Amino acid sequence: QVQLVESGGGLVQAGGSLRLSCAASGSDVSTNGMGWYRQAPGKQRELVATITSGGRTNYADSVKGRFTISRDTAENMVFLQMNSLKPEDTAAYYCNAYQIKNWVRYDYWGQGTQVTVSS
Image (cartoon, helix red, strand yellow):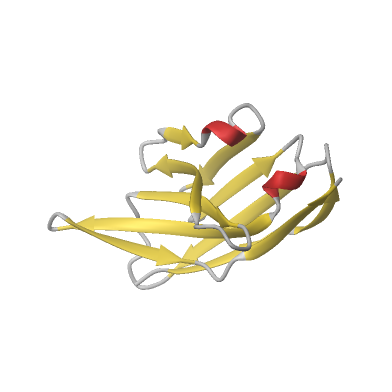
């Protein structure tokens, strides 16, 4: 089991920056990958960025060049640096971690942190 706790959300003006943090804990905290997803009101949850245990990253087209995902493996943390924020980035942001055991993927989610970008 992995428990995830996010922090760093808030209200920011368009063009501003925020940094989200996610701390993982639990009896088996090693993960194959971690990432960030977001969900705006009335919309489906969507991938923002992911990073594997090997450091390979993947970004949604809408955030490429503006957001950067990173992780501190020793501290079991993942970060999302968000620059040049736009009102359309407004959403609840969720930290995700996954483990693959015996070819089965197990996903874990944080409780979410709200990011609001004003125009």
